[in-house]
Image (cartoon, rainbow over the protein chains, first blue to last red):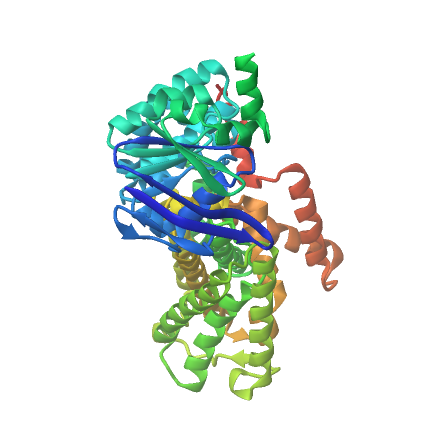
Length: 246
Length: 318
């Protein structure tokens, strides 16, 4: 489905993504985790064409898409959401989602009907006529998801759709994402909420300081000393082990 | 947002019926000017109101319309209608060319405004430099009555033609609110990055809207020339025209189908009022327009059309 190979992105002297590789199969939900500033969002943005990579390749469904414009990549079936939500503020929720639906649907009525379906899927049906800027944080996250989903993607890149949500809201959105996968859309998600990662993903990648440091099942990753050190600092894994032994 | 603006519709129909009750003369000419500036304002509204691209040089397209018609008709002896049609096409081409040049380099906001202003000034200076385009004197279309020359003995006919164009412009704005192109244009206005992520080709959408907008502005320019039979570089390409183009939709209501018409009516009334009170003090109308604009932005940022929305029952936010 998606193959990112040796991707590198520099901003001046800052090496944001360094030789990162990632592959995922169709029909899966894969997580990309890592501490703040690890380069996860930059990896997403570069894969989706918002930044030109300095090195490396991106392939979607076997086709090279490296360096294509974001709109071309979206048309080929890979769409991202934004961690910092980007609603079309003065447009209604229905109109927001319809913009996504218009990628493949020319008619206005048909696009709005598709928007209503997607809204029902993510739980935004009651807010359809509301201007997007009046939505709550949880509502805006759902809107990000809904707009992206309305483009009928093959692969959805979700950038922290659960950040800022309370536990009840997270419990609501987990089955929504599972439903999206069951509908035939593969999902790659950046997520800090480990409860969601564990319940949704069979596979996870871990980034730190721009490089991919580990990959495996959520359980394997949680036990990986490199991952523990990336989050808790140098030597933390050994100290934790020592603590257990004592 | 998409409820029909009934007061706007009544105003438009009333302007259409005006020649049936008002004899040709001062009031009809005033109304005709309202219609011409409503058309120019609608042109600006399509790009600025719906697309969020604020042009400070719409005179470029108005002037292109007026001067193309004048040059073809006066210098080349082309028929008035054919010259006008060519002017509209050339206006659209100018819009597409400017759009392609400017949007490709991701100029937006104040940079876009400055570049459009520069293009308009460039055109003004060029046109005033050559005798062929009237130089500093401007171009006069000789009087020669006949429908073939767009010079009607019945003054109501050109009035109704311009009115029909305003209706067309209004329909175009309504179409934007109900079409894929319009949905994309408004998405670009609200958030370019998100629009691009959802598969929208930014340069294409913005350039298309600029070409459409420029065609309408050129039509306003072409008909202005046919009605008043005179244009010079300062009138056609001057910044005054660019300011008129943006004032009407901003005062009337950006991104609404009837906003430019509301704005054009108010501006005309204010301008005429200023003349009545202070005689022909030069620039007084512009000073009043400026004060009006400041007052509007302070107290009614959504324009006159926003009054309607304000009085509409508020939906409860869930």
